[in-house]
Length: 241
Length: 234
Image 1 (cartoon, helix red, strand yellow):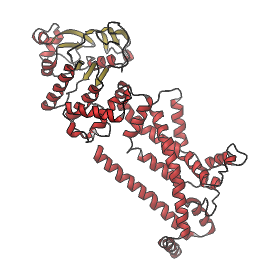
Image 2 (tube, chains in turn red, orange; image 1 turned 45 degrees about the vertical axis):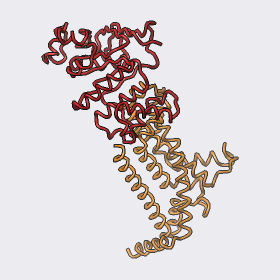
Image 3 (cartoon, one colour; image 1 turned 180 degrees about the horizontal axis):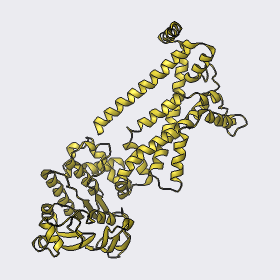
Image 4 (cartoon, chains in turn brown, orange; image 1 turned 60 degrees about the vertical axis):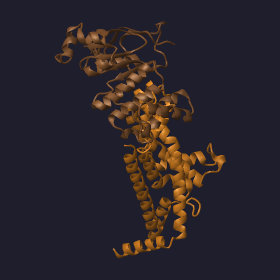
């Protein structure tokens, strides 16, 4: 079943009466990298979790594909800020992504090995995954997700707390995944990264999408006051619109 | 004090001479408790992990039951197994009563809840961190259980050791279902109880020393393994 276009309509999430998502409307086409920007508490990560089904919205609709159906069984993956690292080798951790596909172990490991070469971790294949640096762990997590050939990949601040060179390597892999045909929706706080990577920007504040525009236009002429203040670093924390 | 020293000296002499009776009792103890712990590992660890990962009605009740059964009185287990294996019991035809197999059954029933309870706690802590990613990767319930058991393998050594300690130090159940028959079902704990009641304290102490040394050695081994694993895998 097709995933795109993904139409999100009036999506709300109100755990214990607190409005975390306050009526999200968003359309996603089938290619490119969309960056989600916004202050802390804007609901960016929760939106990603709602899209992949980890959070059950209180109300609203997500319409997948031209059939406008429910979320497909496969095809949506997410990489977390602190990804899971099993106490096993790097190769085992990457091959893990293919376990539910019922492939023989040798096949899983061969594909994982090829993927490790693409993300520059082949020389660490036999090392313990929890012993990797933060940047290497993110590359491993990206490789694990990429291996499953997702149509939509959700990235929740994958470069938070990484140094510039580790961030650049992650950005290179994200571009490659995009070139490989995967649609990417990524949360970041890094404006420079948003400019480098993003085809378009979704700016969120207080649980709402304030604007969704092409990257160049967003930084040149932000439509909303909140976005303008955010770019200038002057947006008060958890500003209410 | 001199009587104590003399008894202790006799006990050490028995050990130094590799006394045949002592060796026979120690070997049977290791076989029976080893088998019980192996069965406990095969049953208890997956049971604990299933409780940790599973979402089913009665999960809390099952957790409370497993935790409660950690403290099962061994004589009660002995009586229950005795009733099940006695000639008039449902499994009487197997002819297992007063055999090492009956002792293995009794010890397994004692160690399974203990190992399951520890496994549940260990796996549940890791499951809370990994659940979302495993769900996203469409891991089946059973794949999640096996993945988590593998990931927690070094921490689960504690459960295995606790089971071994419980099995090796247990006396009530094996006395009832084994009968403490010389050369057939006499293990260290039942021999210690018998020899003490007969006044042969040297043999009782010799066996006690062996029991303590075995348990300390296994714990030391587990400690070394855990530290090696921590250095290797983090």
